[in-house]
Image (cartoon, rainbow, N blue to C red):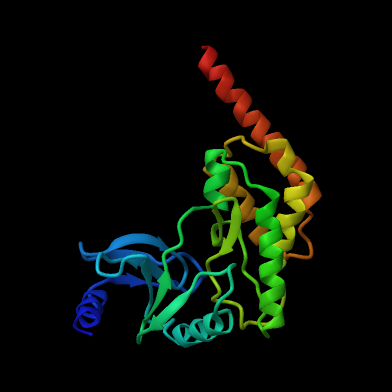
Length: 233
C-alpha cells in the first residue's frame, strides 16, 4: 500500500496537457523515477521500477472520465490473449501489463516484416470485443503490436463509442493489395505521416485505398531511387 502511495505521489508530479483538436498530448515534465513508454491524445504511459512488468497510463485533466470507461472495457476483455491486461485503477490512471514488441508503424519504418497472422489476430480480437458488447474502433498502426509473430491490441479508449471509423478496414485492404510490394522495405516517417494527413482530410467513405495505394508505392519507389542515386554520387 505504501508503495502505491509513493507512486501516486510521483504521478502527481507529471506535468502534461491534452489538446482539443485530438492532437498528441504535450509533455512538460516527467519525474526521473518514471520512464516514458508512450503517449497519445488523452494520456501518457510510463513505467516505474517498483511496478515491474506493468505500466501506468496516466490521463490528462479533462480526460479523467475515460479512466472508468477504459477500466470497464478491460474488465469485459479480461482473459483475452489479444489485449493488454488491466490490473487496477486510480483516480487518474490505469495499471496495465507492459506489452513488449514493435507497433506496426515502427515495423514499417524499420522494414520489419508484418506477418499475415497479425491481421488475423486483430480480426479475431474485433470479433471477440463485439461479442462482449463493445465496438472496437480507432485501430491503427500505432495501436497494434507485433509480438512474437502475433498481433496484440493496445488502446481500447474508443470501444464504447458508436460508429465505425473504418481505419482498420482500410489498413487490411492496403495490406493485401499493396503490402506485398513493399514487404521488408523501410518506409520513411514523412511518407507515413503524409498518408495519415491525407486520410484524415477525407471521410472514411471517400477514401480510396486502391487509388492512394498506387500513389504510395510510387512515392516510395521515387524516394528509394533518389536515395540510391545519392549513394552513387
